[in-house]
Amino acid sequence: MRTRVTDMFGIELPIFAFSHCRDVVAAVSRAGGMGVLGALYFTPEELEMELKWIDDHVDGKPYGVDVVMPATYAGADLGVDSPEELVGRLQGMIPEGHRAFVENLLAEHGVPPLASGADAGRVLLGWTDATARPQVETALKHPIALLANALGPPPKDVVDLAHAQGVKVAALASTPRHAIKQVEVGVDVVVAQGTEAGGHTGEISTMVLIPQVVDAVDVPVLAAGGIGSGRQMAAGLALGAEGVWTGSLWLTVEEADTPELARQKILKATSRDTVRSRSWTGKPARLLKNEWTDAWESAESPGTLPMPLQFMLISGALRRIASSDAAELSTFPAGQIIGAMNQVKPAKEVVFDLVSEYVEAIERLERLTGD
Image (cartoon, rainbow, N blue to C red):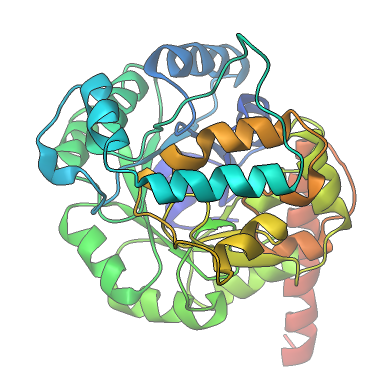
């Protein structure tokens, strides 16, 4: 399986696996694909430890790091470089009515406060320039092969910095226009992500989006959004992509550190059990549908806040929900492919299944064409 991306990164398989779990990242890279660690949830110090572990367990295989540097977000015009100062300024932008709505929702479901002294969690993740740049700096201290960015084109100086260190840059796009903007700042690979994907995603389906993006740019394109089988991988390449970007597929593998409650929900879910909602981050993201997502769409909802205020508002609530028995409020980013995810397997086996089914799909097409 040779495409421009396999040549670009020196990998055997054009399979990219996004995961927040270092074990999954290392396992996929060792299996011949490329694992990509989501840096969002880590402080620079924690990210340093995660990447050091991957360096020691990836057997010299290439891997990547994914950061989130949104093109637009609340507080971008504050001119604040210190994450600590930024948190304080942003906290003051959260309306009391929204805080009251969250507290009432938790009370209705009997969710108690966190125990005294319990870790309240982080209120601000890497969804701003001030918080994402330290993650980029940490990542570039390691022998990564790829730096990926979501939610808009990465800053041009970040692209240039990565290129200066021999690191390729990828970015997610949900429309052809977004893809063109990515290439204009120097991105090497465009990840065309359809609405079926988990997490932040647009409105255009993968089948429609991939050929449009392929026609719009001259760099390699990865197909993303609902890719969870070799047949879908073959379809993505047939549409002009040169590899696949997968995410939700790895939530239930043996190595994944997905919370057990979320894992069990995913294993039992159908493809109709997700919804695009702003209730997690303030931007549309596909999540498991439940009473939490329903509440934010109800008549009583004050409406969601822009990124990063929404997550700052709910971060404590998420910790309380995770520590309680309120399963009806427990949601998680997941794509529509979860309807086909009903087994727990090692990541290496999932990679081999993708390749095996891809080969079967290609052979079936060859029989149909008589070649």
